[in-house]
Length: 148
Image (tube, rainbow, N blue to C red; front, side):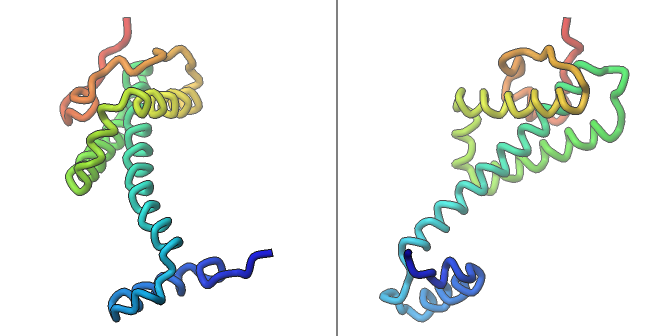
């Protein structure tokens, strides 16, 4: 069995220690393997944040389109807040814009959004792929029309 490392025992304490080593220039004391993992996780966290916000936004746009009789201020507020959060994230981390051009990423986000919308509405007949452009989805004034 492998010995428990400081990383495994207390990640908060480990991170403070690693920061101290970096600031003091004690590079030979760094836990490089775990540091690399944690740095990668920062990027993944940003990607998850974008994906989660986009799925919530798309789910609310679906609800807006498919349940026009239930439209209200809370849905509108959620749509606006998610758009603002997404645009803030894209401004802070411009490399995330590449995800918006990735068809596989969109398919996964769309699936998450339709599952969420189905759970919240009881509806299940949503399109297989997102019928809206990225520009429409992120446009602060755009709302989807009622499907024909």
